[in-house]
Image: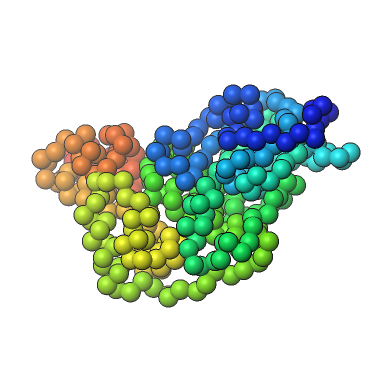
Length: 297
């Protein structure tokens, strides 16, 4: 196909659905009630060519999972195939694209969140994320977006804590591997000081029923989100959202053994979105459903 007649015009978009004429994503994290990061999975049977475009207020990272995407650039179109990664920094102009049976995952990051997440680990104000408008591979980005896909396909069981952790990891990778300077994040301690780790764990235990945020956890020990995630995992062997999930399930086992509360009441008590979410998470960690667990106690 030929590029659109208005190929010299660059149109601003806030989200991918606008680009595709209103075609909605198969799955979206838009209902997470946190706008620092948005995950969307699209399946586009046939669409294009799009106008030249840029995203007006978000950094965008995408990985293609199926189909073919053609970019219309000069006289030599490029073809994108499964596994290709695309990076579009905020307001970076992109070429026109045509989609054919294409399935892909998009993650949109608030630039303010990127700076806050990294904190003093990297001087984000001294560099810019580079636009990657040609097909390339990046195993780490692919791995992070695969985690995003699993999370959204499971109904976002990790909540805001998972989304913030994913956004922090993406921010660090973009700034250290796809920016105008190649930098290494400032080193931090090997593990978190015991008194700070104890403070964090106490906070988690006291708030298991709430939608705990990474911002709350990192602020409680006066660290950037990036350094907090690294030190917490080195100290406990688990990421913050994995640790919270484990502790919620452990508390659920105690409540189930007491036979005082119904499954719905336990789900509400421990911050699960509903009984189905509670059952799925419990089965993932323990290997049996809550009902099966009760039968065995």
